[in-house]
Amino acid sequence: MSEIQRPGALYQQVAAAIREAILAGEFEPDSLLPSEAQLMARYGVSRPTVRNAIAALRAEGLIDVRHGKGSFVRSSGQPVLTLEQGVSRTAEDEFVMPSGDIWQEAEEPSTYRIRTTKTTGQLLQLDVEEALFGCDRLLIDPSTGTRAMHRTLIPFEVAEAVPLLGQEPCKPSAALYWVLTQAGHKLTWTETVRARMPLPDERTTLQLSDATPILHVSRITHGTDDRALILEELRFGADRAELAYRITADKQPARRPRS
Amino acid sequence: MSEIQRPGALYQQVAAAIREAILAGEFEPDSLLPSEAQLMARYGVSRPTVRNAIAALRAEGLIDVRHGKGSFVRSSGQPVLTLEQGVSRTAEDEFVMPSGDIWQEAEEPSTYRIRTTKTTGQLLQLDVEEALFGCDRLLIDPSTGTRAMHRTLIPFEVAEAVPLLGQEPCKPSAALYWVLTQAGHKLTWTETVRARMPLPDERTTLQLSDATPILHVSRITHGTDDRALILEELRFGADRAELAYRITADKQPARRPRS
DNA sequence: TGACGTCACTTGTCCTAACGAGTGATGACT
DNA sequence: AGTCATCACTCGTTAGGACAAGTGACGTCA
Image (cartoon, rainbow over all chains, first blue to last red):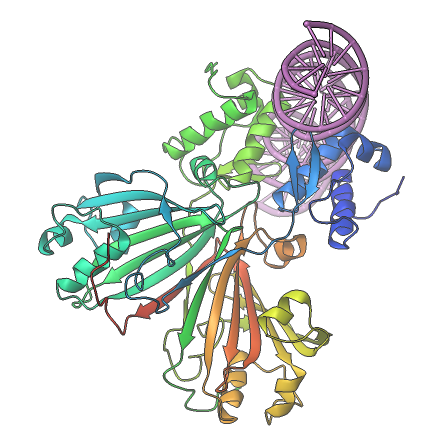
């Protein structure tokens, strides 16, 4: 009977009431929320209204709902895994993406040959219709259960120019960087970080729960002549892992800012 | 009358059919999808089923729905703004967060004094109950309309130890770095990148549409003695902007990887 | 004791129905 | 011609009902 009147739609008022209760700590993380029937009685509304409110909280990632059991306050757990990008480690995995030596391949990587699409072509500075090697991997960190999708794209032109690469371009990431270095390249790369909601296949492959965005890292590695050599993409659930970049300033601010 | 039977619930079949049509390019970006009534007739289902299917597509970020107008295919637009983090630019904004000289302050920054919370305390390596200066800003890039929330946290201890800082710790980002450098610090920082769904207040402040995650960057700046000096946080909608890190490898892989 | 069926509880799906509210075009009235 | 009321269309909200399906506990039966 907690009469509520303020903002807009009924279900939004109910959602706001539950949200405030959660954020105020009235419900422990992982604890069971009142059932739909109880919420109907508590606020004097119909089931569609309650379900609408619950749907809003699910979309915010505040609660998890399990069929036959009830709604649970999502433990606002920070990511358990930190991927340190661009940080010197051991010689082997110094350049490896994703960082860390924890990753296992869930299955045989799938190799294929495609042609440049609009997006990949722009990133690799290629013309349209240029041929590429592609290689997809599903990586798993057994200790945390974190899953990640990894993709490597190598233009034909690059693969043919680099010895040891042309025959079998779908190498593990570490081997790839070693081969490129042996070919005389001094490597530089740019990583672009984006976030978006997963597509259904990404949702199932990465085993993501509701309202979990994915972090999408694109790394373009450049060789000595500043030409783009390979494009690597990494996708994983943002609830499991985070990215860390350690930056050391060579220069210091030279003059006083105007403001 | 496109009879559909395969996977699970009716609304999922409807959602899958629409999703495939969109991804197959049968609907142009920004084009109008059939109305609810038309979809009801097309698939022979009731309105709740159609609305459930549409809700699923909204949660995936595939479509936008506007009251009184209809459902529109979301232009899968990549972010229009790239924040180059840790990249040398002009002397002034070299260290500034967010990068770029495009940002304007939407309103007066709000300054406050708080004590360490569980999360901020850990990040700044502080004990609990230690006092902090806080400063929140709302930043806008007028050319793209991109909005970003910026927060600065400075421990009392740091503010008192640095001349020019104690009286007015809520300075613009560029001035802050300059003052710290003048105090003899050689600056280093670590940026941690996370993604999550926005809370309601973040949704309204950043003017985010449905199913838009936010990118959350935490930068901890360390001084010469490797002590944490300040914590900066930046939040923005992942549909508007992306992050870029340029990484130059000093060392090259030394020995051949095992695999 | 152990296996299994039943039952009560939960959320999931689907329907009909009605009204509220935003949008844009049409047409009448000034 | 210009202004404004109306209307048809859209999605938004809320109600009530019914049955399916997952879960766990309890109790019966072999």
